[in-house]
Length: 150
Ligand code: HEM
Image 1 (cartoon, protein in one colour):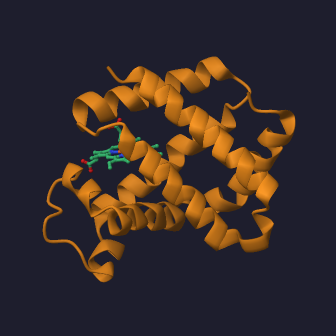
Image 2: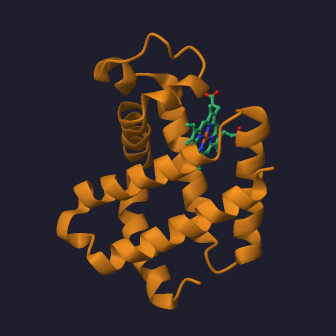
């Protein structure tokens, strides 16, 4: 389980990151597509989008980036209320499984991307200890999403 120290490590970093939700969300989604181009297949009308410029101004990317940030924000805001977190994640899993047809392992990919981007963006502020707390939270989240998939 997450300790009080973990929660503080997560909230402290999140506050800075969420202030710039649109830009950081976009960065995460673009990096996912660059690093794992196969993840693009889930998004409609994406076949012809590949250059950085096209991705930067793509509305679907902007919106999914914001949605990712807002859902993570909901989870982090409710980190002391596990029932609420589980209900948010159950909904997220169901939508991605049954509506968007996204295989669950893609969440592992995006969580890896998130850690990488936090490291790059925050440098020394993102200490080993803080990084471990984030990895713990994202791996609990991933395990729970897996348990929601059928
Ligand atoms: C839509 C959140 C990861 C693919 C959505 C929506 C939300 C969301 C809130 C729209 C609302 C809904 O339909 O219920 C997240 C979060 C993620 C995540 C929080 C991880 C932190 C992924 C990944 C993929 C993906 C890894 C695929 C590789 C999609 C697609 C849609 C969608 C295809 C439909 C959007 C559209 O048609 O433009 N996501 N998502 N998501 N998500 Fe995700």
